[in-house]
Structures are given as C-alpha cells and as structure tokens.
Image 1: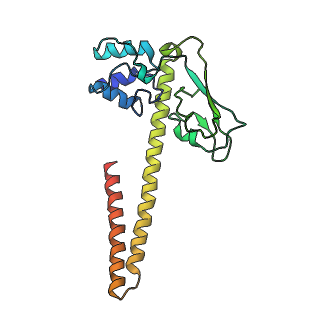
Image 2: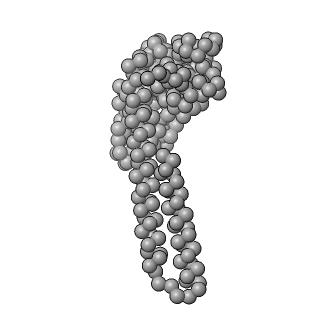
Image 3: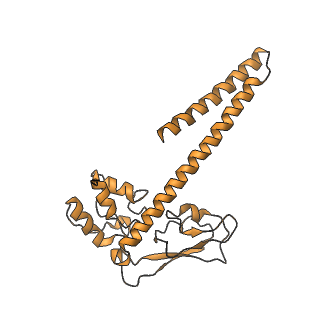
Length: 221
C-alpha cells in the first residue's frame, strides 16, 4: 500500500507523543505538516536530525528548531518518589504510552523502558513527586532515541487510544441503556391530571433527545 505524505512524515517523528509541537500527538502534527499548517521545526525530541529527516521528505528547507516548542536535550525518563505518591492516578491518565503502573490510592511506578520522556505526567501531579532525569548522557534528539523505540511507543500510544475509545463507547452504551430503561419507566408511570401528563411528556422528550444524541454519536464513530 502506498503511504501518504502524512504517513511518511509520521514515520520520521520520534513518537514520544509529548505534544510539545502544539498538537495532541505525533499523528496530528504529521497531518498538519502535510497540509502546510505546521512547520517542520516544532519537534524538540526529534531535534536537528529530525528536522533534516522531515526536510528530506517534504522538500522544505532545513531550519533551526523553533525555541517556542522547546529545546533539543538528552532524553529524560520520569521517576516517581514513591514515599510522596498518594495514588491519585493523574499521572496514569496523562501518560500517552501507558508507561505508569498503579491504581487509585496505591503507589505508582514508572517503567523506564517504556517512558518516552514526554514530561506530561509532571504537571498533573498534585504532590510534585515526579522528576525527569536525563539518561542518555550528552546524546540528544535521534542520537538519544532509536527507530525501534519510536515504533514501540507508537504502538503503545495507538493501543491506549483504541482502549480509551472503546471505554467511551461502552460507557455511552451503558448510559443509553439506562436512558431507555428510564424512558420505559416514565411511560409506565400513572398520571391522570393535565400537569402530570405534561410532566411525563417533558421527561419523555428529554430522555428521547438524549438517546438520539447517543445514537448519532455512535454512528459517527
């Protein structure tokens, strides 16, 4: 299958999913470059070599990394001070590649081999128990990251995105089922006065509208 320009650009990105480029993940950034809406110098993890790779694919000239998006640096890995962790799970929710293990009100730990150094877990932590440590010495950009690591990170990000989408669909289905049950309940309620009949009709209309919105949302997905 022939790859699109966005596919080729995405293949050249480090897949840290760090959002430093200004987009929610590497794929949207690749699509923005392909459509001409983003420049090729917005990816700090890719660094100077990453810009060269993107220039070769797109035909754009090589330009310096835009400091607005950050600076090229040795790749860091997140570490959690387990003595301070309160088990809030906010870091787990923020991690784009499922590199953090833990559960609510339990100590969390980061798997260094899976961490992409995206920094996204740091800000949400309410007790400042997460720090980023450089682990690649003086090596930066693609010298501090491999294509194999990028491929693995992309696979984990895609798996996580698919899981979250599935959970949203399942939750929407549960809510829709509750709405249907409530609609049947409202319809079965006795009501003889005009006020009672009007209230029943109002409830039916609200629930029916909610069910229709859920149906339309499911159809789009």
